[in-house]
Length: 312
Length: 94
Ligand SMILES: [Fe+2]
Ligand SMILES: [Fe+2]
Image 1 (cartoon, rainbow over the protein chains, first blue to last red):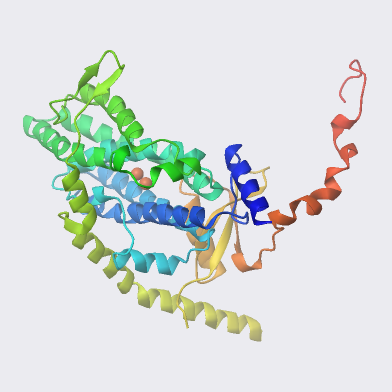
Image 2: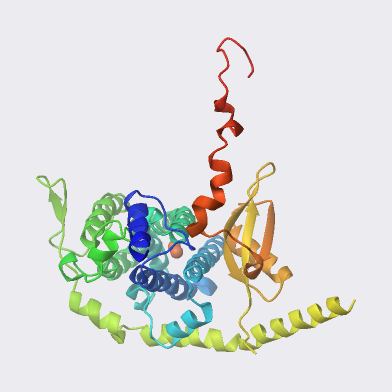
């Protein structure tokens, strides 16, 4: 019987059909998905902070409205994804605790600080750009609710990337000081953006099984290469350079060659040693704890109304 | 008592003339807040003209394991589909 279920699961995955919540699935598949989707959800939620830092100081009402909408979208992305984990039997409260107790990770990119307003533009262009590269293939991931969440998210991400790029174009048309600010920001965010695709394939422990289960559709290195190929012409059009002396077109491969990020730095930030790790978690924890009375009051209010309706 | 809010399933009618379609879920203390939250989470870009929220515990679903017998009554009734009937090609509007 168990073999039967396993065969049916394998066949469904192989045929590019989706696995749905009430289907039988191997324990490892369920665990891997909960871990990956939760980590993804946490990244969206923590990802609100670096940009949220600039909402009150946006240079115009237009930029403020755009930035607010973008940050609100990221909250929405987090919620779509938490909702997907719950179809696998995860508990929302439990996931929140795992995040604020440091037992589950989020993308390391958000442990870097946003020092100038140009960072808002560069995050939209490069960080959301890298996220799009990662996420577009996930629209075909084998677990239905995850794939559907990714489709919604990808639709919204293109606004994120375009508003960032447009912001940078505006700054590049400004003063020399503004242009320098953009270049400085690109210099700081380029390498962390490349790290968003995860460690090189040779060191990536989860890739093989996840590819077989069709949770992951492309390897880290494939996606990183794609991102570099896409970003180069955009940088040229903008008039900025990436801080990589090895970056050049390779005619033979028909792709760009590029250098490797500092993987020691990557692991250091993953393990908690980034500039903002503590601040990000402390902020999330405070928001959760400060909101406790609201959650309690809402439950009390709902219970009171349910009683009244019952009595009437 | 736990203060975690119950789970609601959200269905959105994309536009007039279409059915409500399941889009995901969310937590809310009551139906009214569930509707408001659903508007903010699932229809930030005019994705819907009407929203239903249903407590997740109130949904009864068929199980995929019983799929074959459960859907069998429909499986052998091909005559329910219009393509079952052969109509000469020169008969219009059929
Ligand atoms: Fe996002
Ligand atoms: Fe985004």
